[in-house]
Length: 287
Image 1 (cartoon, rainbow, N blue to C red):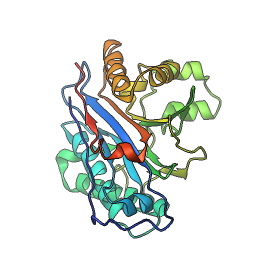
Image 2 (spheres, helix red, strand yellow):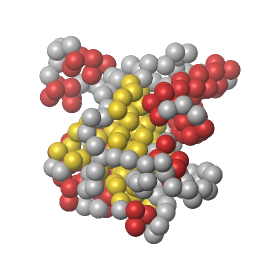
Image 3 (cartoon, rainbow, N blue to C red):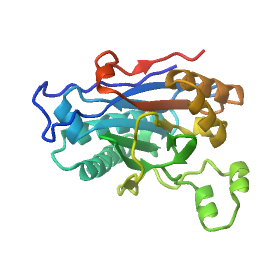
């Protein structure tokens, strides 16, 4: 079991935000498991919540999942670089939120590609990268690859990201049905990744639905959704706390095969008064 979290404490200012409203706060629980077959965990997770309220107003909080590829531990290198560099470039940027995340993705892609080009043992490495900025009830997505972001609102589970896979292409072009896509032998072939080319092709956009009290945000690698269907995801998120749901989801994916690494990051809004007592992302062990 591996855990990857960061609290971001920058400029410990106590001045009031410009609009006079307190910045939104969130609780996160995350876990990453090697699965039942793999020897190495090439998934990485991150949730960063600035300690400074002005920073939370301007930059929000950052949730990320990366699933590396490349073999010989190269995938671990790519995924860790994506997590570290996107977070660093995003929070250090002086530009507005959408442009800052886009530039962070591009700079991380360039660094991973250059490292792979200079080191023969890392040649061909790359990673998925799905990042969500949570800022004052809004969600802004940056995404490349086949890791996913979901939003549970009431009883409805919405997939916010779109897979960059060969099977998704076949589905979009009408060559296969949704049911056929679930069983297609090449469903794990991805068409875009971070670090595999000098020029990055990624999706960015502000989500049209707000992130409100009782909603839940789920980021995960394909090792989860390969084994757990959307209706099962929705049911577990509705009926359990985010800590319980994280444990149950990983355990269920392992019981059903666990042929890949399994990573789950769950985030929910919390009241401002609860934030002081819940400062850190919970790090759980799933047996």
